[in-house]
Image 1 (cartoon, rainbow, N blue to C red):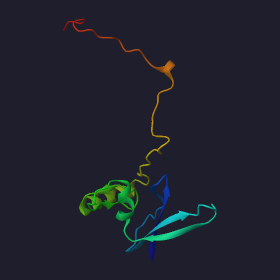
Image 2: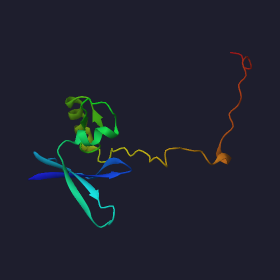
Image 3: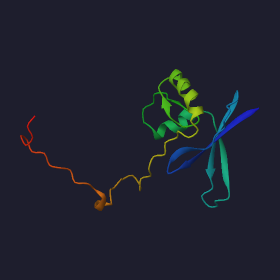
Length: 127
C-alpha cells in the first residue's frame, strides 16, 4: 500500500490540502496546481524532496531543513523532527497559516470597549 499527502499553493505558500492519517513505508507527496484559466482543472506533480519545495518560503539560507509532512514545521535535525512527529500525529491540525500580504496588520477598532489605566506618578504611593 501507498500513503499520499497532497499540498497546494495559496498566497505563494505551500499548504497541506489532504493528509493521510497513517503514513506507510511507501509514501508520496503530491503538489496540486490549479489551472489558472479553469478552476475545474488542475495538475498533480510528484514532490521528491519536500524540503526543497518549502524551504524557500522560510529562509534563503541553503542549510538543510527537515519538514514535518503534516504541519510543515521545520527542524534542524532529523532527530528533532522524529520527536515532533509523535506529537503531531496526536494533534490533527497544528499547521500555521500566516496572514496574506493584504491582511498582515492587526488593528483595534472598538475604542468604546477600552479601559482606562490609572496613571502612576513617581512618589505618589509610598511603600
